[in-house]
Amino acid sequence: MPRKIRTTPRKLPQQDRSKVTVDAIMTATARILTEEGYDKASTNRIAELAGVSIGSLYQYFPNKEALVASLVADHTNEMVELIQSKLNDLFDVAPEVAIPELVKAVIAAHAVNPMLHKVLDEEVPRVGRLKQVGNAEEQIKAMLRGYLERWGDCIKPQNLDLTVFILGRSVESLCHAAVIECPELLSDGQLEQEITNLLLSYLLEKT
Image (tube, rainbow, N blue to C red; front, side):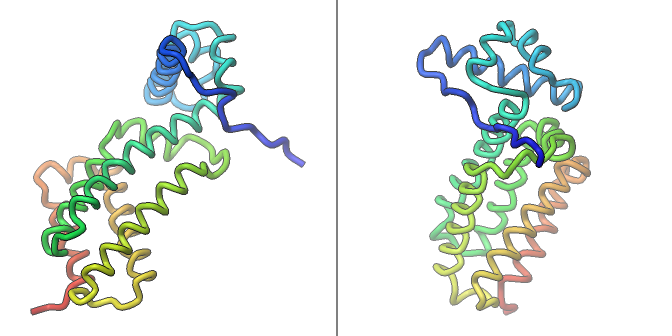
């Protein structure tokens, strides 16, 4: 039976000095991942670049997997906060106006350090589903469902659970692929507009 790899920190920084140390370690990890790839991101290499001892690193992170998992969580939560903030602002705005803004927000979220996003998506092994990431995704789904319930009289689909799944997966997958695979398509806003048109044609009755 394979050994279970710990992916949680040993402890969280409490004092300003320890927070600076952890920030330096996280910054070094992100830099090595984006510049050299996952395989080169050893704990010794990270500690060296961060300017801390390997013992200091191990005070907070038991291994490379826990360090990268924390980076994944931080990066994902930063993206999620952008989307959640936009959904909060759009709750009472009609879909014709809200959907373009939502697409724009999802693209902006994926554009937060796109090189890191690409490495985390393509190179980092799946070391276990991060609970906080799953919780954040569930919060977005709940907010999206609440929005669709609010505007239920204006939208075509009546199965809200299915609609949330299709809408969420469509905007996430398309925006992710655009930012990671074809960033040049975003320069003039045309792809953003096409994604918006696709979602609106699915959601709204034609007049």
